[in-house]
Image (cartoon, rainbow, N blue to C red; front, side, top):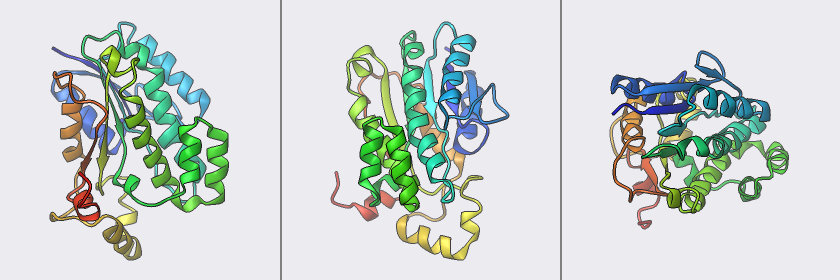
Length: 254
């Protein structure tokens, strides 16, 4: 049976690959992005987040079967925007669309996290994120911008773990999980992977056991499953799809 799936970050990268996969399977996809999408909204702003919810309610009045929060950026020169979109935009998407998910017989939600969540960062920023204090989180990351991406993704992974089992989520049949991709060759990472110094840094922070980095379509394969699986037992997991980064960096973590 065709499902109605909303995907943020649908205009490029992993979001686009997942949208294409779902559409090929016969699902209806409502894409969200800053441009070139059914819903054009800046999820780094309160106005954009409100627009996302109101437009989703208009386009899917009977509810959503699945939501993928895939929108994200990684720009060292834009730390406030990185935290605003990657964490607060993702949480606002999932929380804001939860009433529409509740209308589905088999609702599923997925957040794109990252292997960056494993790396040491600024815990004060993470704490502010999890406390829901956006102004404080943005001020703190502005003072130490170098960890914006990993702080935002660590906070999001922790939010998924702390939220998924709540009565309004799993208790209501809405199964929330996260996916932690390693290095993926997307428009976001392409400029970085052309710089020798950045490549050396990536190889150190994201060592892999396989040959070559992933294409967006490989991540989409896992996401397609999580957006539509039938069992009611998979919940609150952060599934790393990283070429072996997790087992190399954390071999003792089960």
